Amino acid sequence: MPVDGAWPGLGGIGRLRSARGPSREAQPQHQHRRERGKQEVNRRNNKSLANPSSAAYVDNERHRLSALKPMTTLKSSRALLAVTATLASLAAANPAHAILTYFIYQSGSDVVVAARGSLNLPSPLSTTVSNVQGTLYPAIGQVSVGSSPSYKAYSVTGPAQIEGNAIRFANSNSGIFTAIKGGNSQAWIASSYNNGDVINSTSIHTGTTLAGLGFTSTGQIGTWTLATTNDKINVVIGAPTAFSAPVPAPLPLLGAGAAFGWSRRLRRRVALRAASRSRA
Image 1 (cartoon, rainbow, N blue to C red):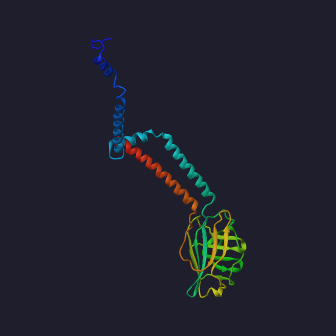
Image 2 (tube, rainbow, N blue to C red):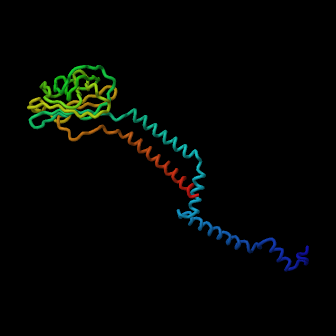
Image 3 (cartoon, helix red, strand yellow):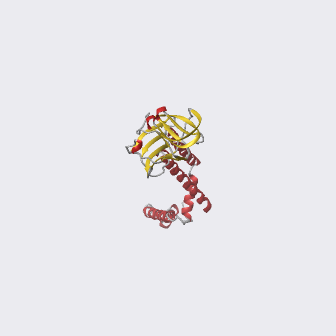
């Protein structure tokens, strides 16, 4: 059939080929140019994406963050809550126990008994209205400091007596009244005490020595465990080096660290999303 009104000839055939596109011989070169063009576009895009100040980078971050499903953050939050709840339950099953320590030591010509620490108390066995004060009575395992018009008794387990051979009432007392009485398997503490309060009490026995009271050892000479809460009560021959509060157990610290790590990841994700929206 004629092309442009002419019978097919060499010119007509050329025009037909031009209308249909490049010849088979020219196709490889054409495809090569097209691939090079794509590579150049990709190179420019990658260069822009590597620059945080570029518009392409901001757009890419916005699209990436908007493509995240809302359930992703929800699942992360649920995972954080689950981890925190698990660690909290484990910490509740293995809490850090409070400790109360009685230090008996020589100070010049006097013997000082100092109580340091705190207690988490269970339900009391009884309440007694009586003026009590600092006392040393090793034969029945009694060490007490401070003074109070009334006290509550709590069950303990431990030795019935400790080292020492004298019965001695303190010449002066300060601080809240506390006592361990191993012979009765009881700990006493002033009725006004609140769980977890710091105990810093002292009784002074003037004009005597540790040896004169029958204390010849050094270090811990007795330990008792408070019923239910498992708090510890210790008696030590020696001066306190420093006042020390109960130390948290490792498990709650681990749980706090894990929760902090999860929360940082969530905050970072929210911050990125907010920054992307503000630039849009």
